[in-house]
Amino acid sequence: MAPTTTALTAEQAGARLHELTVIDVRTPGEYASGHLPGAHNIPLDHLDTALPALKTAADRGDLLLVCASGARAGQACRRLAGQGITAATLTGGTTAWTQLGHHTHRPAGARTPWAMERQVRLAAGTLVLTGLIGGRRWNAARWLSAGIAGGLVFSALTDTCGMAKILAKLPRNQPKATDLDATLAALTG
Image: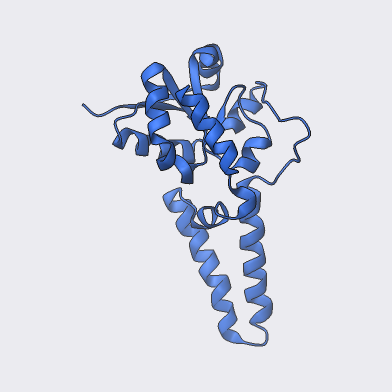
């Protein structure tokens, strides 16, 4: 039988936080901006590397996957389910968690980095503006703006974001190898 994916509300997760292993699948920068107490950071694009540690953690108790809205956590849950690992998501993600007044942890002295959504807005806006300005001299440059607009529509319809996947690969959005290794060790130890 395939593992099932469930969703917990912020209230349910808050009541069970002490018994859950919380995995935050956002980028390290987003994680540093505020995460559920006790959450471990394993960015979505590093999930495959973490599968053995996540399997061990799931064998010991319930996993809760979180992100900003719940979309990336849902993707992660489906990927884990395909590997026989059961996990739940946090309905509404950390956004809902904080809107309901629940505490988030921020590392001391950490700079507040830009959330992925903000990075996407900056990149998309810059590319659209570049296409429009460049189109004044070279008409073909307007296709850049059209391409970005089409990508945004596709992103909304499919609840995916190709630009976020690309931006997540930037060095600022990648975990340090030592941080990821420490997280994996904590999950298996």
